[in-house]
Length: 212
Image (tube, rainbow, N blue to C red; front, side, top):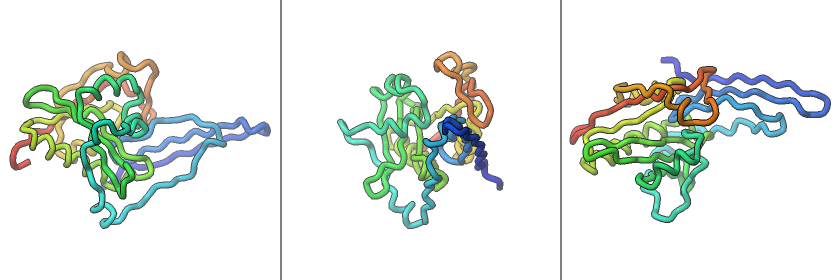
């Protein structure tokens, strides 16, 4: 099966070093990168980490300690608005994925009601994407929710987030609703992924019980 992972690089440079490079990257994991425009001197080399099975086994997922520093640099990969993030963090639980004390992933659980919990944010450190960490966190979120006696877990992503939609459905989530123009109405600047404007929030659900 083909994975939605590709890169397009275009650069132009003038004599006064004010050229720009357009980088478009779509990764298959918990989130895809947005189209970004950066000065040439700000472009960093590809530092992707290819993990082996033993390293993946060593990843530990746990609840973030009370008072610990919140990994906003990861949360902002999945949600570009810090204000939006702060609105749901106070009533949520934050879980982090660690590899030898380094935080490589994060997800946020928000209780909607007595039976339903929502993954409000899920992200993987860019250099560690495409190693299955997103799948590990989704499985952990399902088990954590089950242990808390929730029977339904929901998650939302943009209509343009092809990688996320693929991953979530692969992990047992099914589309149940579309919030039309959610990103247009709630974010000040347009968001683009894969050349597609992110306008609508696609809501997916997974029923969970004692057996999964």
